Image (cartoon, rainbow, N blue to C red):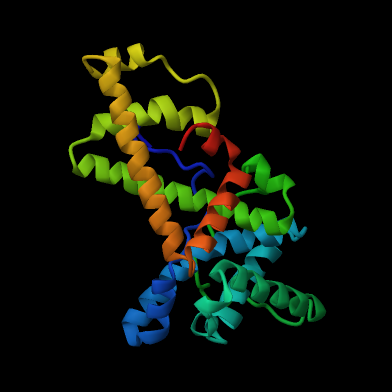
Length: 258
């Protein structure tokens, strides 16, 4: 990506996006092409954590790809898993993980019985070696690897949306100052650049104005993150629990004042 663009925390192609319950509901209520498009979106969002989860269980690349395709083909689509999801019973990602565990147990019992990947596949598995994934994904438990993927991609998407809002509202410099001063040190480590150097770099008259720019972007980030979390759960209490989950996996986020 160009320097001014945000770089994904998990790296390109290594994470998935959180799913809003409204999207799950739509998939169950719609028919024909509309339903197919929504399901395709859900598949695109969820195959990567499923694949990483299977790899962390010790499966090889090809077997993990095969089982990933099979899980979506046989369970998510074949058994209408999405339509069975009940938002009153907790997080969709937990529901999905329970179904995946059951599928994995059954697949092991029937190991070698048949090829599970449907002809042509369901999703494009643009996978990478586990060695190329973030170190956290190669050392966590399978369950925590799944959650780490959720955390990473949720924040990736929120930050992309904040960046897009800033550009749309003529606040590109706000985003650039926030990125350089706050986001990059939080995500990649290292010292934050001095405010004076940022003012010189972006032609900002004084550091107070630059500080205010950062506050503006931080507020947008927090508001949008809260909205995304609230959309994916049933209550404010569950949204707070999700936020604590984020801080558990990415503690530098809280330390950086985000």
